[in-house]
Image 1 (cartoon, rainbow, N blue to C red):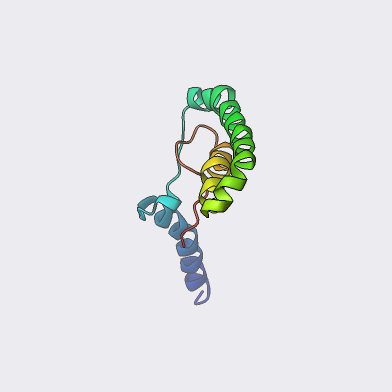
Image 2: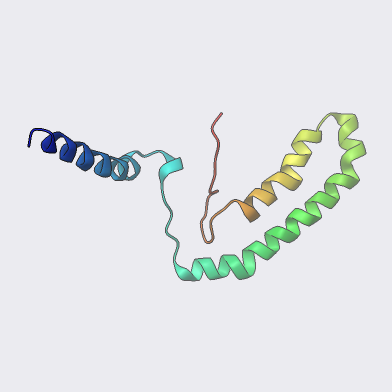
Length: 106
């Protein structure tokens, strides 16, 4: 009986704490978006193909502009703007969500 009460209390606290931490933390990494079905369908049929096309076109533009950006020293900025940002919007975001699904803070 003496062992049952602390074990039950520890189990109850361990089950209840993650839900409290995620719901009231205010940290944008822990906010869960719950988009409606029409937003998911629009994202799947319209936005993702356009973003994929933007990624491919941006990669081509990056390769074409690479000699000029290398001379100017802006290869990293050009790569991020033309390839990485559209690719993140295409592949990292959850379906129908507005923001990115993964953000690493440095």
